[in-house]
Image (tube, rainbow, N blue to C red):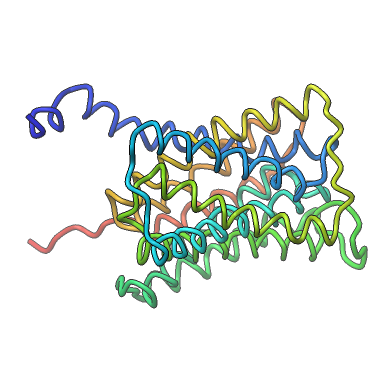
Length: 305
């Protein structure tokens, strides 16, 4: 019976559609960061979002009578969540709130597959080769092409594409890269609902502590703020993250991460339609270079004849 279910047309269609749905969902995350920025402090916004998502996952786990992890596995899930969600989205939302265009932010995070491949070679013994290093070099070149035309030097915390916002965004990309590999190494076998609840415990701590130290805890309660919060909890925290965990469980880390290379273009198009964000020709060329870099790393080699 289980085999019939796995081979049914509906299941095959769902599996085939999952990457496309994931990319569309994931791309909206950068748009939500841009939408929420005028109405809430970035870490405060996430500090509201993550606990709500955690409670929803816990309720789902209880409704499904899902097994709960022991102390050791709960710890691993919390650490994975701190990096996958808090350490990733905290820097990204901060950078976007300080003027980093949503499309450019998505592009920088698009280097994640290159970083993930290198980290995975250390943590889960996935093989790394010369083409991984070549891809990383090409990816850095692509980001330089996108960032350089509008890079503002010597402005400290000024809004825009600055060395600080770029570095903070890169920190977010490193965090989700490490979190993806950590999840694969230590927390893959966890139930998605109960494990997800513990992930958001770690994620909540990762953003609430710096929010209390650094922000005014601003959330203006506007329609835009509540819409952004609702979308981020239901579509992103529940929908996209569940899909991500499923794909990590079913596929190798490098292949799952390769989906991220599609996100920058989709995010840039959404940001153009909604906010009028534009890219120059050289920045578009840089996006293409970054996509090529990811393909260098993630493409499957043909078997020898």
